[in-house]
Length: 424
Image 1 (tube, rainbow, N blue to C red):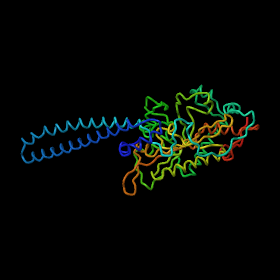
Image 2: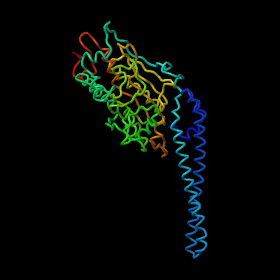
Image 3: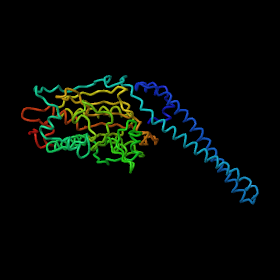
Image 4: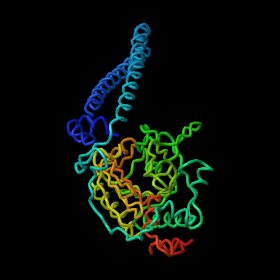
């Protein structure tokens, strides 16, 4: 979240930047600043109160030592009154801090200067494109028909076992999943990312730390009995590895990668355009995460974008990179680029990666800091990207590579699958 001090020091700049999200946040920001003023006054009054109580207590002790018992006893009620007032001030301070925190949770990250103005995905800006649309025969089939024809994934079995949106991968379909996961992880480790295998459930503090909580859209699965949440992305546990940690400057950047299943309720997002693998409640993804020096974060964002480009090029997929407009950008992001792969049979773009710089927004919640060369602590910048999410990659690979003989596997993936063609 944005800090109260940052809002106070940069009020007009942040209000102007947030207009790119098509909403006026000036009222919330002014309330945060007013609450912060109340908090500071209450804290100052409490500090003075406690200092006075300590001073009087010392004086009472000295009076007892010098035999002035009556004077000491007479001063005791003053100390008791000060302590009683201190309790009231502490309660008022806690209430003010909580009100301020809850209000700060409602204010999204300020968009970077390069974020385009706009309200919907139609206003996003294409910044890069690679490859060309595959030439397919007239009888081309969408991936949900290919999946059934080649017996790769069973949606009905998943519905039987769990419910819609939880597919069962079989045979070469399962091997393709495993191959993609290993390929993505190997590409990440070659790029210097350290691999982790994090938990799939996180506590409330972790959800707040990366901004998934408060869950405004009700997208997370909550295990009520234990008050835990199924992760919507590996970003959550990976970034939280450094919650409440102070790093040394020479430890930056911290580069992490991990494969996890991801769980999303996807409430209200179903329709004819989300058939097959286009949208699922459970899917696999390899994530890359970096904690970096603030001066380096946008250079590193460019490096992460190049990393994802390289993977898609090795998979021989026609793709494009989109800079998201303010109205289409996530709550916690300062700048986001989406990668979209071309789906040959559906003849549409499918989002396969989202790569973002959160600047200090997550780090402020996480209290993830580093000591600079002057010995002062600063918040890191956090970044993450999908490298990559599997379902729509699989959909694009199946559709774009269908032939009369079978479905061709890209050369870079063959060492991982052990076969170069999916056949009936």
